[in-house]
Image 1 (cartoon, helix red, strand yellow):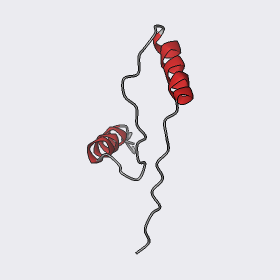
Image 2: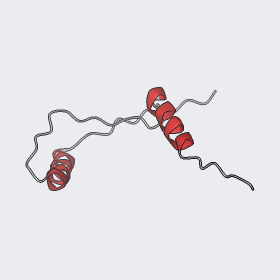
Image 3: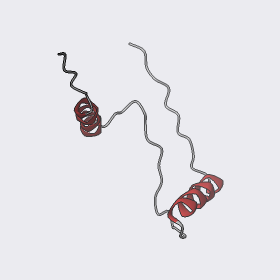
Image 4: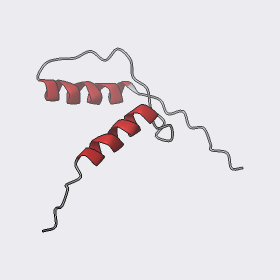
Length: 66
């Protein structure tokens, strides 16, 4: 079994400033970031994935043949 190398990237003050500026530009007001962390893309949220599957399935168009 292959083990994945653990990488612990640091959230730098510069990165927090960029994040804060981006959010402020989007919301149109100043914001304070209280907590930030990196999310492991390999750990998918099962509830969120299930919801996306249901939503995409609801967009199926029924084709009627005459």
